[in-house]
Amino acid sequence: MQKNIRNFCVIAHIDHGKSTLSDRLLEFTSTISQREMQSQALDDMDLERERGITIKSHAIQMYYKASDDETYTFNLIDTPGHVDFSYEVSRSIAACEGALLLVDASQGIQAQTISNLYLAIEHDLEIIPILNKVDMDSAMIEEVSDQIIDLLGCDIDEILHASGKTGLGVPDIMEAVVERIPAPKGDPKAPLQALIFDSVFNQFRGAIAYFRIYNGKISKGDQIQFMNTGNKYGADEVGILQIDMVSKKTLHAGDVGYIVTGIKESKEIKVGDTITLDDNPCEEAIQGFEEVKPMVFAGIFPIDNDDFEDLRDSLEKLQLNDASLVFEPETSTALGFGFRCGFLGTLHLEIIQERLSREFNQEVITTVPNVSYFAYTKKEDELLINMPSELPDPTLLDRVEEPYISAQIITKPEYIGTIMTLCLDKRGTLKKQSYLTETRVELSFELPLAEIVFDFYDRLKSVSKGYASFDYAPIDYRSSDLVRLDIKLNGDPVDALSALVHRTKAEYVGRKICKKLKELLPRQQFLIAIQAAIGAKVIARETISALRKDVTAKCYGGDITRKRKLLEKQKKGKKKMRQIGNVEVPQKAFLEVLKL
Image 1 (spheres, helix red, strand yellow):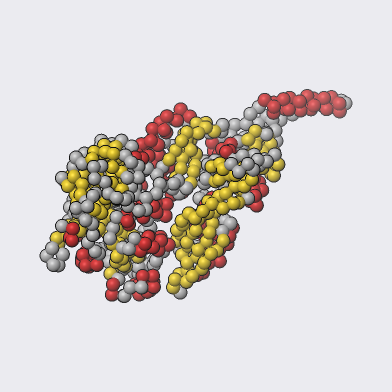
Image 2 (image 1 turned 120 degrees about the horizontal axis):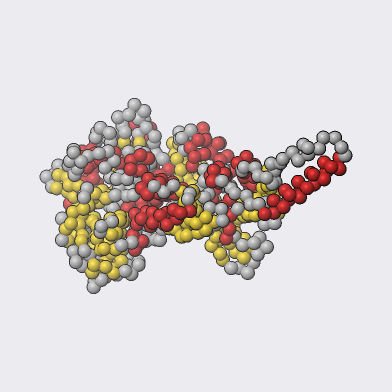
């Protein structure tokens, strides 16, 4: 019955106890038996457990007998907390009527709490504020309650106190879900309209879509259509999501469930798409669908070139589980054959690298992460630049535009100075500074995306002693004075080390790379010149002198011309060697320079 369904999600900053509290809800409703119970039950990837983050969102159905003796169906849609996965969060929120806003009593409100809260408010969700971890000695219950009241404008008695570890407050949360969150409103007799909020890949059954029905009903055997892609399929199986999938004959308006259609590629199922019936389609698709665009690009190369095909297979299998990963083959004179991959952000890149190593035993070299640029030639041709080597010659170039983001940083007042210095150093501009409470400040910056993809998050954490939290959203592309910095060894450019940098930083970066390479490259029988150049102009140089044999050792005494003659002969030999000798850059040197 529709009036007894409650669809809700849990929103929180990373590490505020979302997955632990979900475990307590599952235990309380006996959805999971004690024997099957393990911590972070919804995070089924080893990596999620180790890092304590949710990478894939999950959905699960629970049954609860309330104080009015009615049994309610709860659909809990879990969301990832990290900023890289904000599109997934927005689609999960769109499938709900309410949200549990979880705030850690010992840490207070942080950046992603606020950005996810704004998403929930945009979708008109009923918000239930919960103060988690109240049993900790360091819990600041009154202070954090004031922060929540300032943020939401609610009354103090609307805030529930809970502890994911001990299970304190779970019955109150269950009752609040029944009383405060509205039942779904859809019309069961209208044409089918369902929102896909997630997809998973099963090696035996293909890609499986998770959806929430707004209007109408879906039955096993129906012919369905995906509205944004236009593809049509047969519904081989539909059902509800518990710890395992449970198949049903029909699902109605307000239900959350899954559909198996035998699709073999997860790319065909787009998160945010609308499912409708082929013979009786709905008028319009559900709003808010967008193609997920990769923000950060990096080259992934096998350490041994013979592993290229294995790496391709591994990436294809990973892509089945993670439709937001894109890749295409590329070759590099320095690193051989590999792939150019697009990621949602640097955390996504780290996770893919880690999964390649764990699940497929693929040890890879990753080049410096960079972003996409638009280059405009003097003839006004627009070129999409994904790697530095694609940038046209400076003589043909009119301007380069790079992506900008708006960043939201929440910190303690004593770290404002160091954080501002860091952001201004990264070419940022301060847009707004506001005090949320006496001990928390929100800073808004506009920064180039390229400046934050590398070490920004680590440096932010270290300058703020771990107290600052960070969230960002892309805004637009802006014209910037960017140049391609090429690294040359004896005049030959090394393509894997070229980078797009801002003109003001080019000389500093060039000098740093040249110095590092001088330490790392082994000496040869001939002289090696390491140069950093912009176009034809060399801006930094280091020289590795040649190993030489003492050819004048046998001349003791006698005329100086005898020594000169031998030295000249050696000099000619070295010059000839330098013309035909090539410099091998060892893998270790690449990795060290990429760390810069």
